[in-house]
Amino acid sequence: MDFSDTRAIIISVDFADALNVSLPFNRNQFKSTLVVTHPNDTDTADVARQYGADVLMTKVFYEREAVFNKFAALELGLEYMGRHGWIAILDADVLFPRKLSAWTKRIGCLYTPRRRMYPTIPLSHEDVPEERKWRQYKYPYPKDLFDGYCQIFHASDPVLGRAPWHMTNWKWCSGPDFFFQQKWKERDKVRPQFDVLHLGEPRKNWAGRVTPFADGTVHQNAEKHADINRLFLRDRALNTSRPDMHETEKIL
Image 1 (cartoon, rainbow, N blue to C red):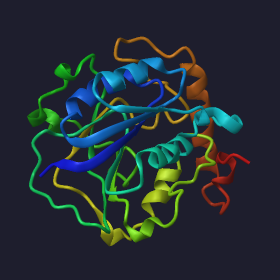
Image 2 (tube, rainbow, N blue to C red):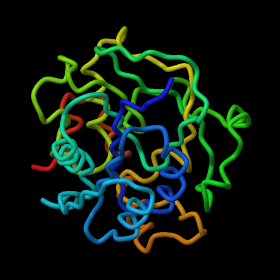
Image 3 (tube, rainbow, N blue to C red):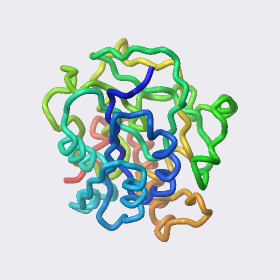
Image 4 (tube, rainbow, N blue to C red):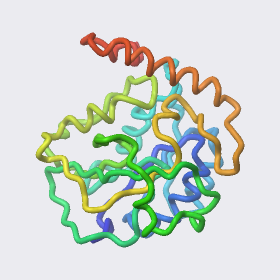
């Protein structure tokens, strides 16, 4: 089984170090790969082109006072690449096993493999642990959702409806992928018979890069990003009983 009929799209700002690992590691898995980034992130663009990925640059990430509007950029990327065929939405820090079990994709399903968490980002794809050792790394939660770190589907699936498929007025990098996966009924959400390896800590970079880069340095605004991330998570936890709990996370 392979993804030779599947096009990948990756949203990546300040994750050139992760792309430097994931793109060469995954390079033979997909028919093509599109990386969407900000015009100021030339490192990401350079790494993407080095490994044969197409690049789309947009300023929409921070428009209208957004902290990091990932999903507006994702929708621009989907328009750019075309909404047809099999599509894989991936995070920049997700690695696919090179040896996959037999598996047939079916139109009408959303596929999200479970993820094993590797604590850091290696300096190179050659430093990734052997796939036989991935089992030693834990799942992040007792029951992982079908979230945007990896969502595979067919563009003709009727549940998608008219574009845009995602909410594009979100202030930060959390939320729209959850509502996106709710388009499918539970019976149509499928776990493939393989896990992916997710580099670095989860839930830390939703408001910008917080976790250290592969070389051990940190983003100049890491502390600010961490504060914003904590604020959004705190407000969400405090307002879980409100029907409008997500309104504070949206661009007005």
